[in-house]
Amino acid sequence: MRVTMRKRLAVLVSAVLLTTSGGLALPAQSVFAETSAYPIAANAQTEGGTQTKAGNERTDYIDVLVGKFVSNLRELAAALANVDYDTFIQEIQSGKTLAEASGLSESELADRLVQSIGHSLEAEVQLGALTADESEQVKKRAEASILEAVSGSGGADSFRKDPVVGRQIVNSHIAEVVQTTATLYELNSSQLRRALHEGRSLASVTGQVYGPLADAITEPLIRELDLAVQAGKMSAEEADSLKSEGAGAIGKIVDTEGYDSPTTNWMEQYGQHLLYNKLGFVISQTVALSDKEEEEIVAALAAGSTLAAASGLSDTELLRSLSDNIDISIDQAWLEGKLSANYAERLKEQAREQLTAIIHKSGYGVNVQQEARQATYEDNWETCETEENGETRCTEVTEEATDIDPSSYTDFKLNNAISELAAIANIDIDVLLGRLASGESISRATGRSYDNLIYELYSSTSKQINRYVSRGIFTEEESEQIKSNYTSGLVELMTQS
Image 1 (cartoon, rainbow, N blue to C red):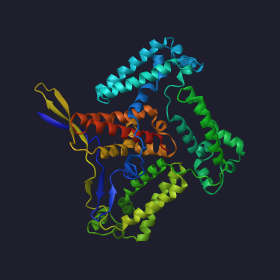
Image 2 (image 1 turned 180 degrees about the vertical axis):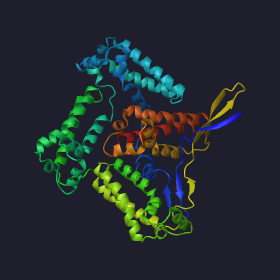
Image 3 (image 1 turned 30 degrees about the vertical axis):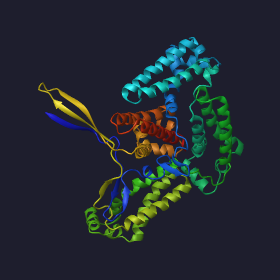
Image 4 (image 1 turned 120 degrees about the vertical axis):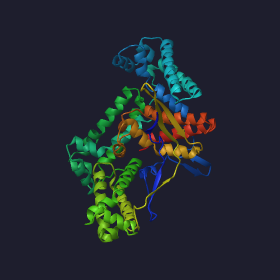
């Protein structure tokens, strides 16, 4: 007996547009993934031609991949030499090379590191994440980094550093100045933000002298940068420069009257996500506000009525009540530090504009049609057969599209990168966006390193691209371009604030 069981719905679900009979369209996925909130999601036309939004030059994606395999050389060297890691790090911090700290010769340690990374690369080729050629390129570049690292003084300050960790530490601490102040002086952070909004400064609210207050807020930043140096993620010189920069920025914030956090890309994306979710319940909220049953309102809409008329409420009353409900959520997000006060007000205006259009649209929400805006690239399921002895054997079946535009595919993957990150980190998308909007880096918000995050996202996409190449859907040249553009987008996504 043959039974087909859907293992999972489309790996890459298509973006869907919900269109009402009245012509008003709302995206069926989060607004932030469909708007310009993502600066990396599409190609931009310039006088010099088409470029990715990640920059004028495509990222050398092979070099980015190398980071995955050489970013943890200290941990790997200690493990391969079978020495205690804490002792190993103390030796490194005293100025010894990786080889000296490991107790192995430079050539022996280098050979072990190269062999270990080689095994990891072979496994990635077997999984389909890397081609044999890509594996060889990564191995050669990793080997060059390893040879430099094993002989470098102080654990090879010259070997590959985390390219963004320092900047993200500074950005996070600057974004969290208000929360840090509230924690240090046992204040309610919401009340503190309200006081700032009324025109006061952090110094006046806390009653602290400017200098000591700024120093106290800066101390956690200095401590985290020092830890990053000890972990080999940045040089002492870079940390000193960032300490000075961060202290200067925090000092200005402390003495600023009416300070408001700058609006970041993540705040805008979180705000659009919040607004989309709230607008999705307009009909049910209208039912709650009126004295009518849902069936009665839906029937009126189906007959061509507007939501305002169907509710029995005046346009002004319905709009005010629906707007007030959304405003409460926006204000709460501001008080939690997920939105700036300025952007919160702009978001409220946007909500009112969209609500006005919704309540005056004839037949809103009725006869919804789903119109695919992009092709579903792949669908996986299992076909299972039950043998005479009762055993069931299942075979995974993959159905893939046969005509895919490389540029659209790249844009689609980048637009869904945050959703994929949330799934990788096992975090709800609302929670992840909230953390990012509050100032946390992606690494901190997900609990994963920069290099590992990029590689996990790249790996799943690369497997699919490599399958498309094998089936003739993409050429080798298109594959290389997609991977480079996609990696460029991921790098910008990981480093934006």
